[in-house]
Structure formats: C-alpha cells, structure tokens
Length: 305
Image 1 (cartoon, rainbow, N blue to C red):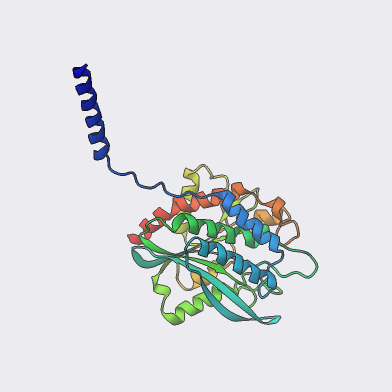
Image 2 (spheres, helix red, strand yellow):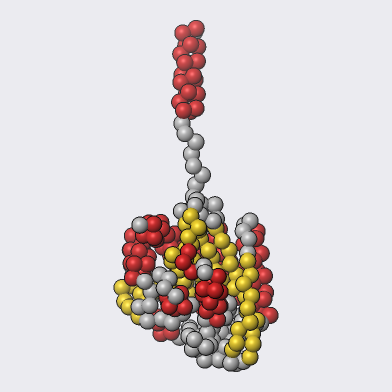
C-alpha cells in the first residue's frame, strides 16, 4: 500500500512538473465572421437609401461609429464640403487606425454611400453596404493582433456620382479629398499600399483583375485566393475599373481594387432596386474576408523588402 502511495505521489509530481514546464498557449487569433459582417450589411440596408448628404448616410455614419467604438476603437471624422453638379454637399470620411510596430501604413478602404435616385428605392446591399460591413469586421479581427505596419481603415463618403459619373468631377469625392489632404500634409510617403473593396457581397461573386491596380498587389491577393480554393471567384481576367483607388494610383501609391462590377452588371443588379438582401450572401463576405486576411502577411513582406 505504501509503495502504491509513493508511486502515485511520484506520478502526480511528474505531472505537475510537466504541466508547469509547458509554455503558456498564445490566445487564439480571431477569424473573420461572415455572420457578423452580414448583420452590419443588413443594418445598413434597413436604413434605406444612403446617398451623400442625406439623412440615411448620417444614420449610417452613426451606426458604423457605434460599432467601432464598441470594439474600443477610435473613429476620426474627416469632414469636407464637396462641389457637385447639385451644389455643395457636406460629406464625411470615417477613419480608424490600428497602430503597428512601424508608422508606415497599409490602407484598407471602401465606400459607405449609395447612388442617389429619385425614381427607385436603391438600398445598395452590395454597392455600398457590403464594403462598409466587411471593413468593420476586418477591424474587429485585426484590432488585437500585432502587426508590423500600421493599418488605417477608411470608409469613403461620396464615391457615387450625384448625377453622372466622372472620375474627376462627379464621383469619388471622399477618396479625392483624402488624397488631396494627405498631399497637403506631406503624409503620402508613409502610405505603402491601398486596398479597396467595393461590391463584394454578390451571392454569385466574380472578381476580375483591374488594370489600374498594382500588379504585385493583385498577384499577392489572387495567389491567396488560389491557396484557399477560390480561384474561380478571383478570376484571371483583366478589366479596367474607375473607382476610389484611381486617385491613389495617380499619387504614386500602389493600390488594388477588389470589385465585382462586370458580373454584377450582367446579372442586372448594378444600380437597380434588385441590389437588395436577396442579391447578397454571407458566403461572399466570408470569401473576401478570408482572402484578404491570408494576403496581408505577404503584402507586409513585400513592403518590408
């Protein structure tokens, strides 16, 4: 009996010593949750149309700010008055910064306004709500993860034309203002990459390479998509898209536009009343979120060379 007791004590001591010698496990990394992102999308659609300068976009801005501050993040407003064919319109970009070990920045961006229409109720489930929702969820995932570079999230106001699209005079008001302000402040040099998401909620997602986008950024993201088994969604087809990233490209900042435009047009959803909840899916948000998270470490490595 005594021998059995001694053996038991020895086994217990060994177990305790072994457990004590094990290094503490690192907390599990957060993962992209498409259900959360879809709820952010749904909340924006519930507000209704959200064109720049409207009551709807002010409510959307308040909603996005509440979600981000509830995560412990600080939201900066970048207000400006845009000169539009309909006269001056007050607009506001929203910005959240996640500090990294280095001050150089990677921008993660999208727009949160919808196209102005008087004859249809346009709620922009994919074209407006999907990009804004995805960025909120990406901020949640990345906020507690140590990063080499500083991440800056930007929700652009006024991407849509007030009357008729023109990249220089009637559209992309928020991104144009941001670049101009950064130029005046001498802050462009610290921006090392700009990633734009737009119209990424379509349930039948088809994303094509954009010719304005930096080839190395596009290659990294499309390679990540292939690794994750999404090569049929991130297609090796090249198109040309005018979007918020163009002003950054012109300023010499490597940029990429992740957008489903041509396929969305072909399906009859672009700038129509059918861009509603029935046209979007959690799965599409999950795919784009996962691909971006898989690509960011390689983007950082490329910049750090």
